[in-house]
Length: 97
Image (cartoon, rainbow, N blue to C red; front, top):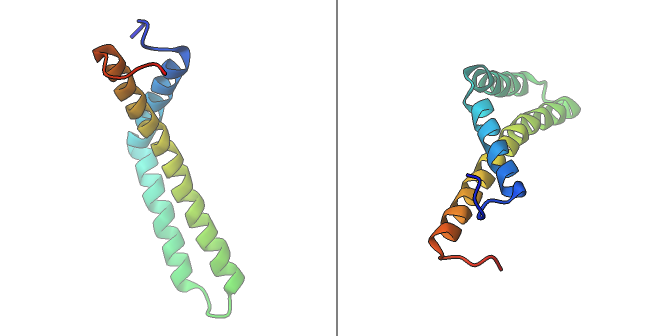
């Protein structure tokens, strides 16, 4: 895609989307996400009832794992939206402004 409908920004967005998709689809990373979340859940369940700080830290760790996954997914979604915009511009259904 090197025509007039694709800017350097949209090209970068599509490259980022492809890279993020490849990372998200990597079996090792999928397993790591699953294993980390399971470890956090098990640790949370094993926490003493008085250990508020421990539970807080574990729940924050789980949130970080989910945020990393969600951040990568947002690159994939941005790429899909950019591709849709490019297709609409090519069809003449969407103006530049």
